[in-house]
Image (cartoon, rainbow, N blue to C red):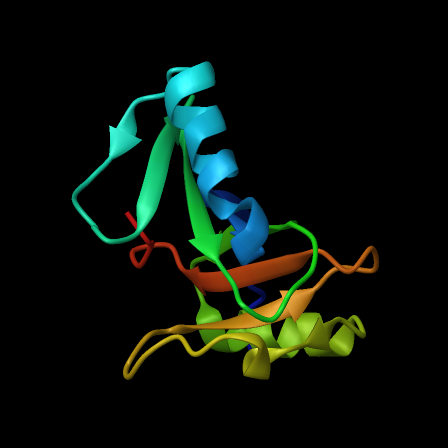
Length: 124
C-alpha cells in the first residue's frame, strides 16, 4: 500500500515575461510599487511579495506574460502517482530543473504551470 502525498502552496511565484516587456515589468515592481528586490540569486530578478517571492524571468519564446506557481509536497513519488491518477497533465519539457532536483512540472486545467517539488527544495 503506497502513501498519499500532501500538497501545500509554495513560497515562489514565477512570472515569465517576453523580452519586449521585461524591463518595464521589472521597473513596475521595483520602482513603481517599490517592492524589496531579492538580489541573492543574481542575475535572476525577484521581489518580496508579502509572504511569497515573485521571480521575473525573461523568456524569448513567449509573446505574453505567464504566471507559474510552486506547490510543495512531502512525498514527490506519491505526488507524481496521485497527480497522474487524477489525469493531471505533466509537462517536464517546459523548463529544465537541473541535475538532482526533486520535482516536476504540471499544468492545471486552466493551463497554469505548477512546479511540484519536495517541501525542503524551493527556489529561495
